[in-house]
Amino acid sequence: MDNKNNIASANRKYKDSIFTKLFGEKDKLAELYNAISGTNYTSADIGLLTLENIIFIGRENDIAFMIDGRLIVLVEHQSSINPNMPLRFLLYIAREYQILADNEAMYSSRLVKIPPPEFIVVYNGKDEYPEESELNLSDAFIDSGIDNLELKVKVYNINKGYSANIMSRSGTLSDYSTFVARARANRDAGLDLPKALEKAVKDCVQDNVLKNFLTKYGSDVINMLSLEFNLDDALRVRENDGIEKGKEKIAEKLLRNGMTNEFVVDNTELSIERVQEIAKKINNNNIR
Image (cartoon, rainbow, N blue to C red):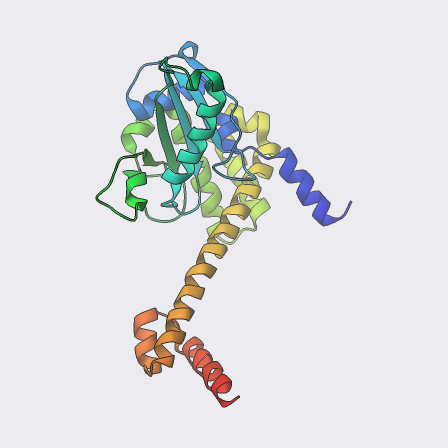
């Protein structure tokens, strides 16, 4: 089997994330939700739902469940927080309501009751982000004065050193945060990814951090987190490429309007070398 097929096979095998594997059990999920919401539910109060993942294609890192008559969607996000998350959740919940509701009942004179949704994102990325924030669908409206349709997404930063109150109520989440932080620190120290993850697993087991989980699923965890880190890096490159291309288009427009190279550098944050390359390309095209 060639390398491409090996990667495809790995993605199929490790499609879910460490987060869903760790918190996919009802007792751990109750612990996590109680820590976030300040409630006291038990595993008996939770009804897990199997929902098609359309929030993040290719990686099953969402957990959906019913609790106290509400439909909760809980998602871990490791790359930069996307401001389009409310729109993604809107498409998500509309699809699920369509599945949950009886099509014929929707067209009758009887009011169809649906569970109210709650959307939670736990952020575990590298960028600086507040401990708690809220994303609103109405922020995306072209006319900001109209908010006939609203959808709110609560975002909690679960990186090491953040959200102390939540961490104090969930030892599992605190340990998970510690494990991811150690894996990243090992990478930053210069270890290649496999060795960085292996060391994080070994050190955490030794220090009784997610000991039972890592002892049982150690090799799976290394493979899953390797895929997650690689995907996160790929998303960052794609995002940065998009930002860079946007800056280059602005630079080209400014140069065509007669702005100096120095002015363009100051107003786009591109390097002087890159601005000079763009200017040279414009000149060559004009000569032709």
